[in-house]
Image 1: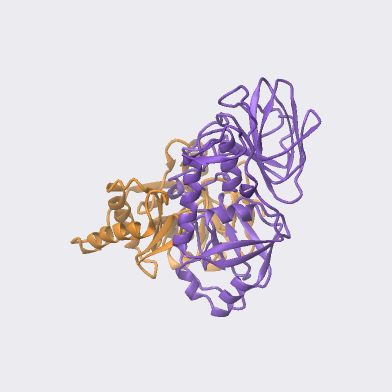
Image 2 (image 1 turned 135 degrees about the horizontal axis):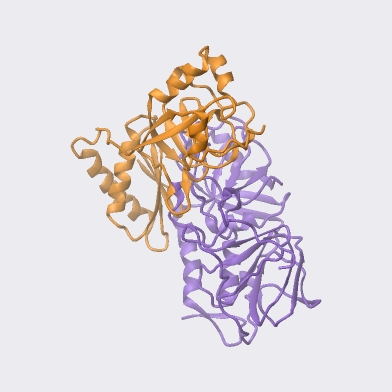
Length: 312
Length: 232
């Protein structure tokens, strides 16, 4: 690792079952891009990979490696030659991988064949920097990233266009209304689901703050309760925050609803100033979509051309 | 009341107000749910009046989860003696109360019209119950402190509160397991680690906690650190 860029952390499917100890879930923020990086390499669904914020990454290959890059569009160069994202890349010993700054989205995923060989803590390789636990640090210059498998593979595979992250002028986020939805003023809920918000620059792995029309009435008071991933909370200033992978486990702000995991991934990809809009969705639809996404990962395989997949 | 929250969680609400008997009920309920060994169960997060239940949405849907939980809750509620408080593990936490370890001790005393020794006495005479765990790994919300020493959070939270800091916020008290930003009124410091990589959180919901005043010497001998100070 010559330079990890702004912030690069090892992430996988996240910690499962440790919230009651106050530990955040962690894990890759953009489920789709993360899963496709692993799928390109036939990795296990929850294999550890590198999540980098905005690019600016520089590393040198030691030995023969196969990698895949997905997520935010950014200039990628191998030994100075431009390379596309969303496909497998074969690197040989000494190859120099340079990823420039992304301009349309936020997160880039780098997966290696077999997954990253990273230390496991709390049943996961995911690093939650804000908890300051020993060994939970971002990747630094001079670090070695070790793949669990080496060697090359042909042909080059590439993710079909319709599955890739596409630039959009406005991102639609579904919202599963929760029981506290009814306790907000109806005008405020109308405002929430009809107005456009912009991603604040005060957004990180804990949560994304949104700027826009603040709620007109003060949100209902609640007793601190467990927080689900994607919970939309309204603090005193009346501006929504979507809580993401590294958020605290309990909280005392009222929540009109929850943004589903796949949509959280879309939000996590947005740069400050990006426009987002909420629309109400029902739980069964969201669950079906999530199940289909996971089944697609488990039950499809690459056709020999490497350009498309088929159901098994 | 059980309601779906997200694609992978439902919320059980047991009461609409905080009550000292709830941690025990939440504790028993969590145990009953875990005992069933549901293959879809991922986590249970109790907090004051509620329990957030995480499940694997790929192997079960929310209707099944709610139906299974309802059966368990009904059995728990109709069990004889369900309102009796359970004992809960008793954990004693030593605290070095002083101006150097508790930057808000003097101000809290002044605000409440007591002297520092009396604040310490009132903080140590009660037994507290862990109502919730969260905010940070191992951070346990305990209640309730004597109303005469209850003070709201500071107007502006501190940028850094040292690990082990013992604080008061309204009628809650807690120990910061690690250095972090925080707005609680800090009255002392505890040398006991509250979170360990192997054994995880020392405290769990339903535990009883008692604070015991120790002096500077004992605090340092128990591994307490005074090098770090609170930063506003």
